[in-house]
Image (tube, rainbow, N blue to C red; front, side):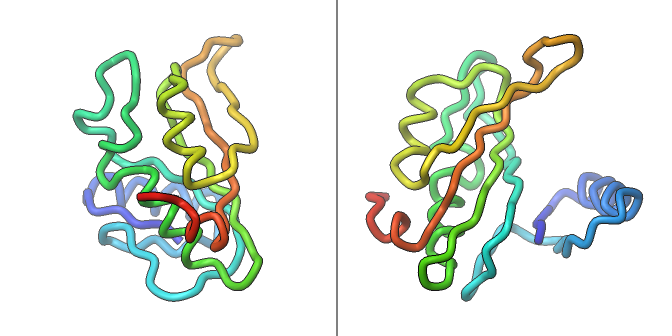
Length: 138
């Protein structure tokens, strides 16, 4: 399931999902988890806005804040299930960003992507669960 409020981004994403043949429900509204969800894999790429200063991403100031998104996904888990969440990050991921995420989710891996070994983007892979969401201080 995906959420997107910007019309141009929504249209481009919907087109890309069709081309790739992916079965993803894309909704033209803000992120919302209401009620239990099945375990799965999710991609978070929230607007960074002023949270990215060109050097570091303040994950607590994205729109909405990444820790809040992770906690919402964790809280929506059924029983002892969990979801894997891939969070798109800038090419440099600070210890402060990792610590903020680690308070609400279990960090699985940090993968860098780019052409010819460059680090153009980073993908933080985390596991969220109801148990951890309940225990996280937000």
